[in-house]
Image (cartoon, rainbow, N blue to C red):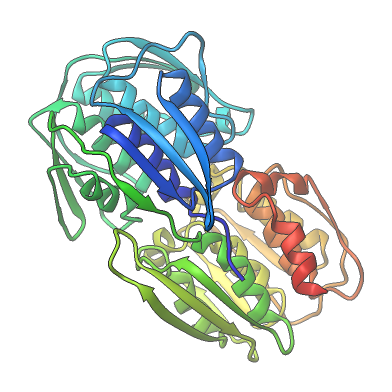
Length: 414
Ligand code: S3P
């Protein structure tokens, strides 16, 4: 099987395509609502974006306006459910000489934006948030490069500062305490940015034009994680997922699957592009208890719901140091615990984590996805192991990253 294009890489390709000079082509762009939000915001900022059909799928074309070339939007920019859209665009708009307002849906309007507004303020931008959240108004100003240490490991914060850094005078340096996904660094290099990457430290020189690029977006490993978890948990289960991104900053969940007992094989298919692409094979085996330590969390942040779902099939999973989960599309600790409990799981919540025991088989029941795509998918994977049918409320949330998730589930179960 295959999974839709990587959401994280798609946002970056669209945005850097908009800031580059020339026409960027993107193959395998993520189809979900989140990247749709980035597309719509960029279109409202004057960027021409179109699709053409090709034998191997749709190709997206972005007509770049060059650094600082976006035009003032006629209305507030709606980032929908997408934190990546809102935070990245704050970084981009900070370097443009106009004022624009960013809004989002009810979930996004609860999520913290000061973590981005603060460093952008240090660079010289003026950002007025609503109590630290959206709506936020960004008044672009001439920016100066800064050296910034991110207070929480966050690829979104790192990226927003680097995107502003493209428009700043001098060099912008971001240091992080733990490695987060490095797609911005790789995509910036593909667009010819003057960037230097060392362990836990990235710098970018401002004012250097970007050149349009041809980007191939691999399948999203965070989407693949749900099928990997299903295969690892279901007796006799096995799956081969082709064309998936195997960037090491995204594949820590495979190591956890192995620690839990699953059989995992990763084959590199194409390592020549900006992002390595591979095939994953995951097979079921009897599951063991696993403890996830705080230092591992940044590398697993989007896959913890899938791993929690797997633990309901057997073994156990204990997670600490994952307080960041509380500020995702939902409070992913309390909503995950409530939903799994609704399906009959033995699960406990703590301030910065949770514990799932797979010692007893799920009875099945009702789980509320709380408007969160990853929870809807996690509950579906947990429910596969239940004795009777389950209902997932708000399951349509999957559309933000994986519109065909339930159709694929039906196909795999047929
Ligand atoms: C993302 C970074 C992560 C992740 C999100 C996508 C990105 O968020 O959870 O789904 O594309 O940079 P944080 O940077 O807030 O941890």
